[in-house]
Length: 529
Image 1 (tube, rainbow, N blue to C red):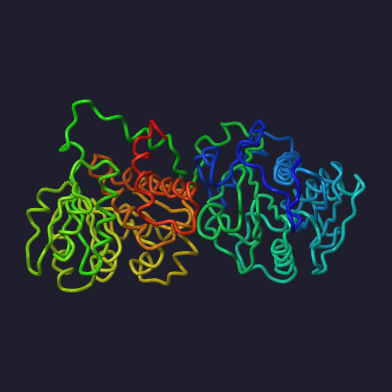
Image 2: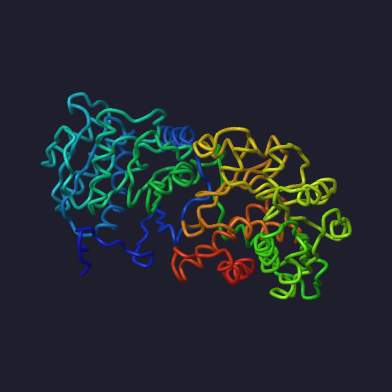
């Protein structure tokens, strides 16, 4: 029998304990994200799906609310499997209606239920009022929220739904803080559809937001749960389509596609038995100024492990000998000030530039030589900062900024990038005529045709040098014949999955960029993954 821990929290089940219900896709964010749907929606698109579902496939909105409550309670019981004390906090809208019906199911299952409503129950209307009546008719009691301390095993957040578009204030802000306070003391926190205070489209926090241990979301997978601040606040994520037919989603717009392993298999086919190194791409890595040789070495070694047939390095003369000794498969040339690298450029299929490049005259000369060529590029780090100072566009390149670099490319505040990562990624791509991989939690890859979302990766990857490794992986795939969009999206995917595998082996804290190298080789051979 599972038991509570010292602070009274019920332990979570792992992926192998999950029983999948019809129409429901469960996920533990480290193990089974392949069960999440591929298409991802913004708030308006989910609202349109919801309305169409009711109009075409349900008797009324209350029937859909009942389905949502059943799916929510099933997920609640999966995480906290034995009835105890549950506090359900309900707002006035449909999200609150879901909460009333979840409370009724918990009450009937033997939980001690405290239901706190943020408005006078007499002011409820429509399906929410009906849901409240159902709870009361089952024997439940509704209390007004009065900024009280929550004492429960689980707090259920059903305060605000996906339509939030302004800062949370007043009693709702107080309720969110009481939920978070309870969570800090060991109470489990469960969010219905979305943690209150999170923007469903961007992951922006509207002044206050619930920090949930688990969230179940419905109908359409919301982008705000998967990028920006969303992943921090939603905890482990489950999705229920509420038995929606596939026809509901046909021809409906979506904002992004989630990267999954099947996409990698489509673009990285087994190699021909008579292939040779010249067919697998020659990557030139440019960077590694004095004192920064490690950056470009990580890029180059990642390019090799991702499958490049040949990898050359143009770096400061201080580092070339040591780099060749440490990794003899690399073809390293130490470049003196004023020395041409044109022969290296001519021989390359793809150039990765930026890691450890620096900002002196030596770096200026290498940057200009690369920009004068017509070779496909992957641009990162110091090269992105140069590009921000002297904007250009060329079509055959991939830019890989983190939010700070993205802000410099767009001449805006970093906060603006963080608050709306979708717009930032698309604006960079449009302004620079580039495929853009905007790094961070929920990395986004913007191509002219599509926006891709990566839901993998972990906090242990927040360490210097991780971006250098990513640059090498992307450049390698680009050189192997993938399109710029494929190379950027699959490179981000391989890099993130490798980081998760390395963290699974030895933990997140202390994870180093080079720890990913063995796993990169594993994931670029997708038949083995």
